[in-house]
Image (cartoon, rainbow, N blue to C red):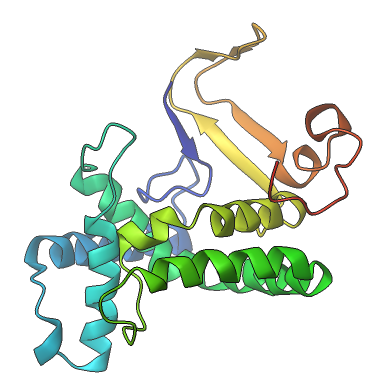
Length: 209
């Protein structure tokens, strides 16, 4: 299966090549080249860096720790695309997601209590309890927090509708044939509220699902 977002992170499109489209592709290439350069030149030396560079180091540290389900590091192009999405696209989407997340915790104090207990348990295992940052391994252990964030995005997705384009011919599990170049629209908001998928309690905030 070979799909890409209709928005296109590779700077390519089938549009009319008007001036603003050419400028968009040029700007996109510059951003991608900048991120590729940052990945190639990345060298962790947090103590001697400024706050801005420290911010970049934290991002690169997060990206470099990404692995697939088999524990294999992702290729550089995956790190590049995730890095661009994290820096440019993640600001508004995460601000919306976290707004709904904290609102739901306010409405469900028992979930908030479980999250705090989970975090306190991880912090309690540290030799130095005054460290304020969490490493990727610790974050991965925060299963209930992850579940609560996922449940938030189910009910209130930051991107309610997605559009994807098929790079080549494909077939859906139900047998529907998708031609090369076809655009697929689907509603993430509607999928997260389907009774047939989530049951009679689909309206409820339940990280335990």
